Image 1: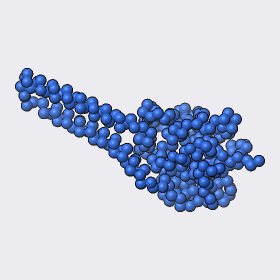
Image 2 (image 1 turned 90 degrees about the vertical axis):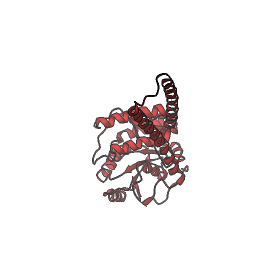
Image 3 (image 1 turned 60 degrees about the vertical axis):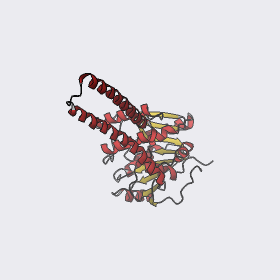
Length: 319
C-alpha cells in the first residue's frame, strides 16, 4: 500500500539564515511520523542568498523542492502557490523562522488521522516579545473583524496549520487576488481543532512585518470579509441628514423668534469642515472596495514563477 504524503509549505522572504536550521529542526519530528514528506519552499522574491541556500539544500536532500517568484508578491501569494504545487494527502504551512514549532507536527497528524479532524490550526496564547503597541492593535483588530464579519478569525491564530487535501482544494477554489488567508481558512469551514502554544522568538534574522505592513494587511482583511464599513458610512450619512434637518428647523424657529444675528460663523466653519471630513472618510471607504473590485476584474495572476526544481505542476483537485 502506497504511503501517504505530507507537504510542508514554507514561504520564505530573505530567510538565508533560517532555511537550513528550519529543515534540520523539522526533520527531527517528521522522521517519527508514518508518512512520506516533501518540503516546498516558496522564495518570495528574496534579495539575499535565500535561493542559493535552497538550491544547495535541494541537491543534498531529495525531499526539498522550491519555487522562486519573479519578484516579491507577498506571503499570501506564496501560501497560495505552495498549495497549488503541493502533492500531499496532508498539507501544512510553516514559517521558516521556527516561530511555528515543528514539535506540534506529530500531534497535528494524530488529531487528523485518529480523531478525524479535517484541519488542525495553531494559535498563540500570548504575545511575549512583541512591542506593546503592536500587541494592542492586533487584539483590537481581531475584536473588530469578529464583530463585523460572520467569518470566525481566531485571536492569535497562525497560518501554521495542517489540512486534509479536501480543505486545500476548497481553498484553491477561491482564486481571489486580494487574499487574507486567516479569513479564508475560517470561511471554508470543515471540522477544525486548535492547538495552543506560547509565543516563540525567531531563531535568526529579523521580522519582515513592519507596523505599517500589518496595518495594511488588517485593512485588507476587513475589506475582504465584511461590508460593514459600507453600512457604517451609509448610516453616518443618514445621521448627518437628520442632524441637518433638525438644525434647519432650529435656525428657522430661532430666526422668527430672536431675529437673524450675524455671530456664530466660527462654529459654522468648524461644522462645515467636520462634515466635509466625514464625507471624505466615507468616500475613502467606498474607494477601498472599488479598488479591490478593480484589481479582481483585471484578472492578473497571483504570482509568477521564475525558477523551480519541480518538474510537473500537480493538477488542482487531483490527487
